[in-house]
Length: 82
Image (cartoon, rainbow, N blue to C red; front, side, top):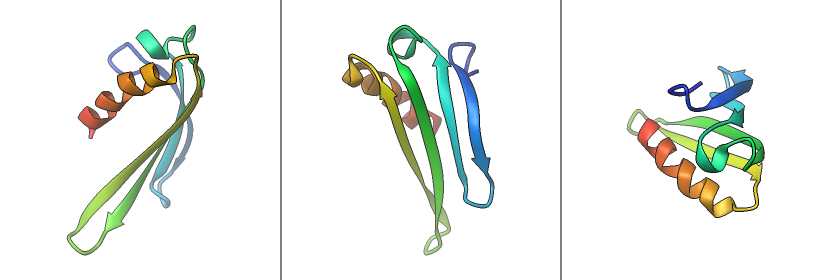
């Protein structure tokens, strides 16, 4: 749960590959269970050895009648979390 607003289920966590995936079961607005189905988020962290930093790659898939609303809602949240 994120801020008591998102209800998520961790699907996989791989320390060695630096990846995780999860399902959003319910949340506010466009990611409410009545508005979106099958939301699977995937995170992957890739090392950048040249300057000892990392790249975080995020992907998601979902079924929603208004996909743009889901993206517009989620993208600023993920950017803020990073």
